[in-house]
Length: 241
Ligand code: C5P
Image (cartoon, rainbow, N blue to C red; front, side, top):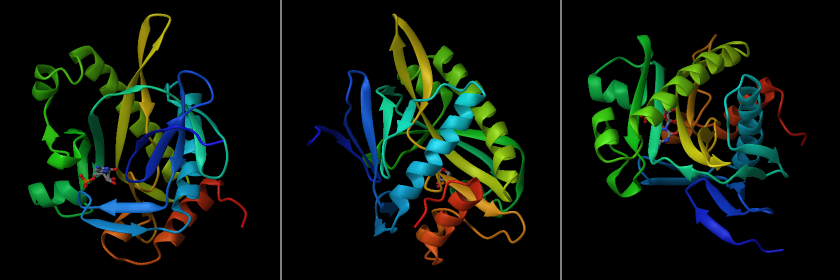
């Protein structure tokens, strides 16, 4: 059966789901970087990110973080709740890397004095510009109450994921989250949406500092598929060949 496509992004496609209020999230192998200027394919990435994100969302649900995840359907698809995406990328940084190093001249690898949360507007045409709470409130992208809830959830997610990754020898350098609004019985809830995977996190091997994430693609470091596989293997979710 061909399902109706709702939205196609850079790394994922959303299809109409089997029941009202659900969607099917399909993970592609496509990779993009530098605001879409660099394109490529990472063979098998979609399969791995589907599993990795499933695992992490389930673990987060277990500690009481509400997410859009329902269940994995097959190798590349998962069933999710349909949410109204809040147009913000919430970035958490534990160690300096990427754009904060460039912007503020902090050497990559410097441990930050505390976790730093940044907000960017989800807008490809504008290159996802960083925005402040003032912009978010003034333009109504999220109410101050919603943003407070998002920050509390984000900090809990960071604490939990730091420990989870450390347990498998990976340092969670930084990552990006997206949230959505879900209505149930006239009540609105903020839930974690999108995905958590090596596409959206920086993960460094604790022992060797080797990069195990999308920076291998961004910076042409090679062994991109192998790095994603290794993250899946350490999490215990590597599909059998
Ligand atoms: O590029 P930057 O250093 O700001 O990225 C911080 C973190 O957010 C990285 O883990 C990166 O993978 C993630 N990110 C993302 N999607 C974006 C921007 C950043 O997943 N559009």
